[in-house]
Length: 179
Image 1 (cartoon, rainbow, N blue to C red):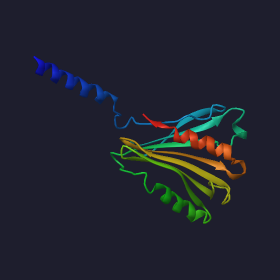
Image 2 (image 1 turned 90 degrees about the vertical axis):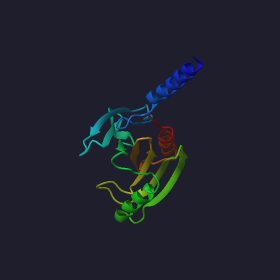
Image 3 (image 1 turned 135 degrees about the vertical axis):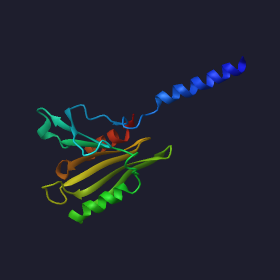
Image 4 (image 1 turned 180 degrees about the horizontal axis):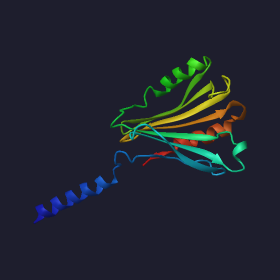
């Protein structure tokens, strides 16, 4: 009788923890966007089901004055594309330096939890599509989740970049969580 009760208890324990785990293809990164703006989300079409993208854009009367106009989130299913966070900042910096040789990489924060890496980094003195070199700072957060690789990317124009704004976005990205 005791053996049956113990087996039942062990089975119930393992069954209850299985429901709490993230299912592949459903994992997402969650973070708080600044509340002073109204944000609109739009899915970014991708060629494959293994990559999901969302663009968060500021809407409303305050949109013209906002330093950050858009936040882009990309989630890549690691079953199909086994990516790692390690080395990502250097690869992106090399790519940006091809267009802007003075671009500088700053790793703001790096942490490893449960064997998964998360890195917050900035590439300073870079550019957007049609702007000159040195006009933008690119702030990016990359994180490995249990089943997916996540990137959150935003651009801050140099003329609007302040220490308070930089810290606000760093804090928002560092307090993100994977669900």
